[in-house]
Image 1 (cartoon, rainbow, N blue to C red):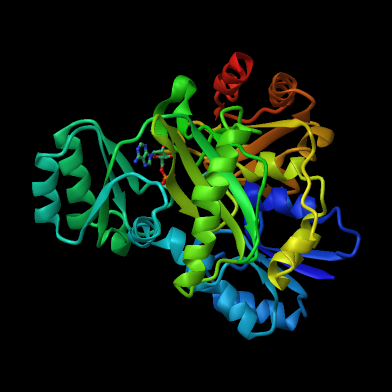
Image 2 (image 1 turned 30 degrees about the horizontal axis):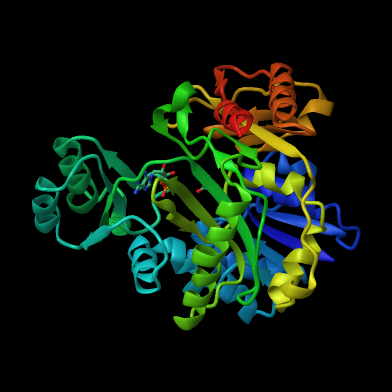
Length: 423
Ligand code: AMP
Ligand code: GLY
């Protein structure tokens, strides 16, 4: 079978490595892939947003199945177009991907169907938003409605910061059309849990839980990033909380999307916060999380391709989805300066054995050498019987990899480790 995976980051590398475990898959194409993915798939220079070229490529090359991984092509309707051309896909159609593509949509959905989330107001007029924050309690959270490369959420501790965020998004249009509307919501507190799930629109099967580390620096300091590391499972996510989430969040979300005529098929990601008043949804993503995927998929015992096909065919209730009784940790090695300005083009030095065992996010091949090409460069992952071993072994691997200006957090998983010991 010929498979095509759209995307080119660490998440896609993790998906491709897992798909390769299925012997029915003979060829995997990555559009566009990256220099590390090139070891595991044929990379084709077609961008993740170039849907027309993706469809042409799939038809010409008689692709049997496509996995659409990133938010942009999903929200632009890549699955709809590929399906029209007769290519079965893993991923939601455009109508369902709006659950991530519009925060206004997702907030209204949760309100309408009683799914727990932060209280909020929607604004399409900056004057009214500026007036509203004057009397709001701080901190307050300001979110651009549309996709914003993970940068569209501003937590304002002061009125000045809130006003600046509103002006930046709505008047200076720093996120373009994504900022035509904004959500202003209540600031919640508590540990965060990421739960990715497989759903065919009827059945929902949560994957093993995980914990992201979004801030750039140790101790959760510094700027927000796409994610500097992850661990799984998340010790805060107890069986009681899981049961509560299934009954009050996961199943109601699937049902709500069906009732709205937007049946969701694919990977639905729940970003949860365990607040003193119970678990609440911080955000939905219409796709696998990055770098959550880099710890979740290595723990998947069942065959990923079989599960994906069951999602597409609507037979998830008859398909086993099992996870290993183990732990995983992923530490992201980034380019110095990320998430702001950084330099690229530096050779990544490590033995082949080590490099073959990492997820490559931002690197390209130049003269047969792997050189940095992005902010997040590598996701160095390890699986072990305990969380402590998984973390130690990921850091041991990192010590064997160098590139100029590399930086990474030294405390990935430490909070989870502490929480796990307190239980
Ligand atoms: P997002 O880009 O939607 O993943 O949000 C980025 C981060 O902002 C989340 O992971 C949370 O840490 C934080 N966040 C978003 N909404 C809220 C909220 N209502 N209260 C507190 N923190 C929030
Ligand atoms: N790690 C969070 C995300 O993928 O949006």
